[in-house]
Structure formats: C-alpha cells, structure tokens
Length: 293
Image (cartoon, rainbow, N blue to C red; front, side, top):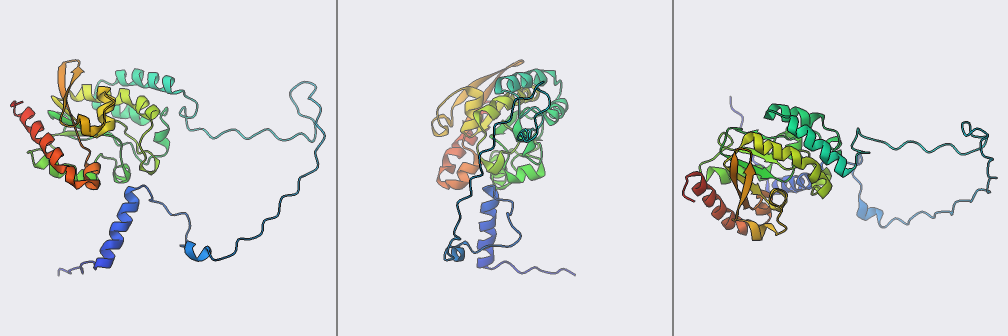
C-alpha cells in the first residue's frame, strides 16, 4: 500500500529554504543544546563586573644554575601550541614545493588521489570532513573546474553535489553533456571553513595537484567555472564578467587544450539574470566539441 506524504505548507517550505540558506553559508553546527532568545536577553540588565584584584608582584626568581631545572616558585613553561601534521609549521613556499614533488610522482588519477589523501601540508585537510577529488568520466573530452567544495560536497565527497551541482547538471544537459561525458573537479579539494574563499596560500599549495590532475585527464577543453579557477590556471587578474566567454591556450604534455572561462553556478543562483551569458558560453563549448569553433 502506498502512503502519500502531505506536501509542506508555505510556512514549512519557507523554514526549509531558510535552513538550506544557513547550510550553504556554512552554519551547519549548533553551539548549544537549547535555543536562546537573544532579543529577550537584551532587556536583562548586564551583571556588574568587578575589576580583578591585582596580585602582589612576586620577586623575580633567580636564574637556574645549570639552565635545566627552574627554581621553586617560577612560573610553569607555556603549553606547546596545537599542531596538525606539517600544516602548522610548513611555510607556504616549502608546502608548495613539496606539493609539486609529490604531484609529479603520480602516474595515474588513483595514485594522485592517494597522494592527496596523505598530504598534510595544507591546513584545510584538517577542517574538512572529506577529500573532494573528482567526479565523472576521466576519459571525457571536457573537464569542468570550480573553486572549492561546499557543505554538501564535503559531506558526500564529490564535487558539485548541492544546488550549484544541480544547476551545473542542467546546464550540461542543455548542450548534450552529463557526468558520464564530462570530468568535474575543483582547484582546491577541501572545503574551507564556513564556505569562505580559499586563501592565495591555500590555492598555491593545492595548485600542483590540480595541474597534474589536468595532465592525467588530458582534456581537449577545460571549462573554468568562476574567477578563482580562471585566474589560477591562466594568470589573468580580470574578473569573471570580463573573462567569461574568452578562450585561453593551456599547455599540456601532449599538446594544447582550450580553456573556456564562464560563470560559476553559485553566482547564477544569486543572479539568475546572468544565465543568458552562461548559455552563450555553453553554446560556445558545444561548438568547440563539435569542431565548429
């Protein structure tokens, strides 16, 4: 027997959309078990705070005779800082150099993914739930690259799984593509906390891996979704509204791929009027794949 579930009311739909907005913004954790009425708390007078009593100055302890055991009464040594692998101590240049060396060792995409999973010089690895390596067909002629994973991608472990991914699937389907005929990744494979933009240092550390990933896929066309991916791979400083629709050459060991810049699906969700520009770019992509451009 089939049981039909009642459709949500308008108020319930608004609440679900409100919660989805907070999850997309990175507010996916609670800070207390019970909610607090902050507006009601504003009417409560603040408690009077007493100034702390200054302790009497202690006499300066004498220096240890051998520099090994401190004299009685001396303050304890500071606690060591919390570290996460090499990410807390590695300098950006050292981490990027190490990333280049490790990326060159990968002879296949599986090897590259394993190397990335063990790479501990990027601090994003320790704040993300999962490594978001790629999705789709590695034998495809076209490769899509975004900026960094979001909350849904971090939870599932694959790129473009949330609302942006649903829109990207529709955009690909409009030109005869899907995840079996395209390869999808990001320039940064770990989600930045709170869905913030990755820093230039984080991008620099991850860049050797995405460059090696592109070499191993060896696509004919690379589609950069948004300004960060476009700027990382082309070196341009222009914004995405100036670079979208443009073709850039991208050198590969086997020849030269064509790099097409377009708008990120997340940007299109915020500004639907710009979808007409993305549609022009995807028509240009279809022409490239059909050999008509």
